[in-house]
Image (cartoon, rainbow, N blue to C red; front, top):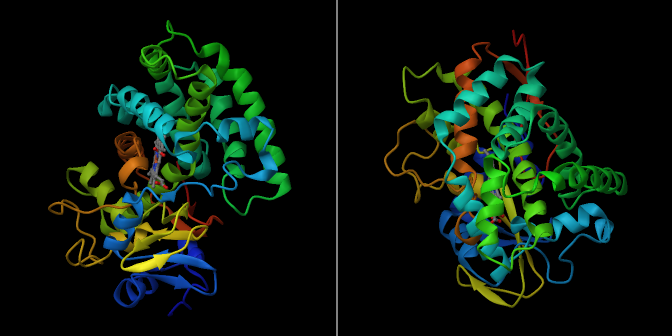
Length: 369
Ligand code: HEM
């Protein structure tokens, strides 16, 4: 049965099959203003790359660096320090520290941790959300009790992130942030093991990185993991059910899933000063929706873009962003997914996608064990 097209570009993320819609945009309007949503929309690989490289295009509106509903709450305090939510010199400095710490992580260790956790998952939801959260918490150096609580709380914290967050979401996020700060602050010590100790030692060399910023970005590692990795795990298990198990090179299979059926389908930028994108004037104050999943399937970026082909030569993958805000967790997310896919032999079906403006997280069904 042919599915009706998504009503707006933002609704495409959870549509059963958004790819014909994206292909039409890539072919006919790779960059342009969408009157229905009031957003500028970048769909073509070249336009998406241009926006991500343009310093006039920032991660938050200059008039509202922290969403009004969480300003002055613990969630707002965390949000305002995140590398994901800030631009400029402090972001660059803090990002360098995060990247250096994440570079010390061995992918085989991550995959092994994920496989072990996957073997103990209570159900599909726990496998998609709980396992990645507990793996990253363990990499941070948190003990099992704290890991499990932090992984649970992060689900409430991320409720404040989408523009569609309600007052109830914001209150839940504020309560979760307060508890996360209490739980994690005592762990922030140079003698700590794992990534936390690494981060504290690296940040100590840069006397401008404050403890509050470090603590917020430790929470940021957990929150950035949460939905995105749940989507990659789910979409990979469905792709394995569809295409069969690859005899080898699971990492190449997972990378192709990330390109072909991106767990994060879009991101946003806000224009701080008037700029020109793809030859068009974009005014200050404009909001841009970047369809990363459409750019992944632009034939100018990837030949035969709709074909699922693990091991492509030089694949252009936009799913993890580009430029100053590129995801530093790509290798960790891939290794977690490889570990889960190795451990889980059950073949799920799925019933639609979880409601989200940007993540594509299938609701998995069937017997896990
Ligand atoms: C499949 C899983 C993942 C996907 C698809 C993903 C995707 C992304 C994307 C698209 C961005 C940039 C957003 C933008 O520029 O607007 C981003 C940023 C980020 N990601 Fe990931 N991510 C994933 C997993 C992870 C994991 C596991 C971690 C941590 C261990 C992580 C940490 C971060 C951080 C800290 C940022 C902010 C970087 C910055 O703004 O400079 N991500 N991610």
